[in-house]
Image 1 (spheres, rainbow, N blue to C red):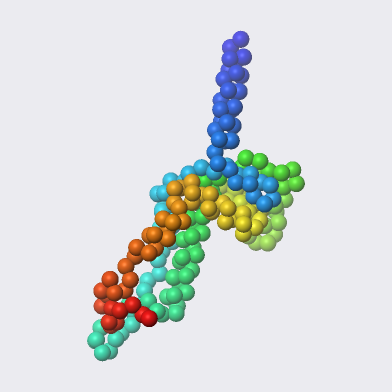
Image 2: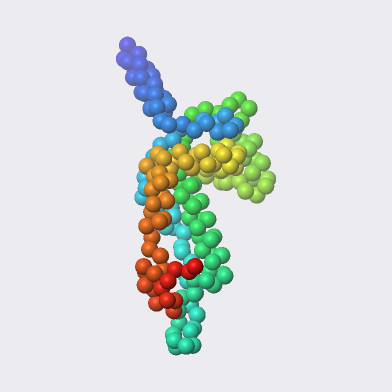
Length: 196
């Protein structure tokens, strides 16, 4: 009789867990894979992004001023800055993928993250993760197997942004709120006027 109560309690707990999973917002990918979404703490995303060091602005000696000044127009710096932007975006996206998604269902013609065929092919290509680390495996499964189209990536990105409460309008407003060169009053040899 006691075993029956334990079984009933376990069944109820499993049902509640499944109900919680299905109550979450979902995204259906182009290949039929369904992912549940959950919010990712902003501090986790911030920490992931902050692990990528910012490139240092090179300095150049200005003979007329007899001093060194930063040269943000240096081509190598511009390339490093572009790479930094790409790397931080990827770090944030990977944090959202790993912590903000879980598998709800996978069509019969597709492999789950636990499968071996998809992983074997990636390893053959030299881009496979450590097969023993379930988080690396899940992240690689999403990036290299489940997310097959740009539309999948865009849908998941938009859903994650919406779940975090960040709207495109808010991003646009934040961008326009940054002061221009004239408002900053930088000592950079310019007149302070915006370029025409």
